[in-house]
Image (cartoon, rainbow, N blue to C red; front, side):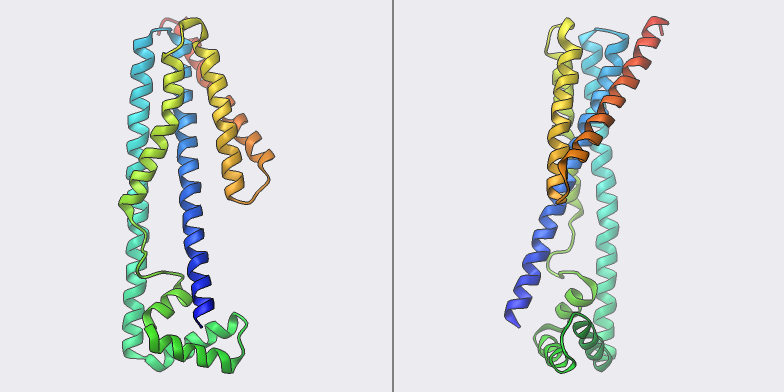
Length: 236
């Protein structure tokens, strides 16, 4: 039983790492698009470096804090659910061990083992660590690796901040005549990279993902720039 148990843990750990990487890429993508839309919109109304820096920095801080808070709440809820499921499993193992053994046997049989092998495997797993066996096979949870809301919050905060820094720096560092072009090109290049990365992490074809990503970002910048230009022309 050592081989399959190790493979399952390894696969779960790999899946968890891929999920974190995918979340980081998507968080950076959000930072790029939202901040780019904001600063490009302001650039449509004014060429003041101070106004652009203020708007971009405000968007970066608000977005990163919002992402972190949302991720903390979401993952905390998931962690509470995992703890509740484990507590219920402990109670069932304590109160009805034979029924839980039969349940584990059926779960293993449903995975392709014969009735006899499944029963023997269930007994061995139960003797070794009943809670871990049920948590892994029945719930898909590793009791020693519950989701951490603080890790998720910091990861989202950093990913969004890294992404948001690109359009912010691109809009304030170049001279006024090049700001918009540099920002748009930098943002589109970054969206190509994040679209390609997210597709590869999801084992999907990158072409469509890159096209959707860049088209969405380009549309966001076009709309906000048009709005900013109209407001600037109206003297708002």
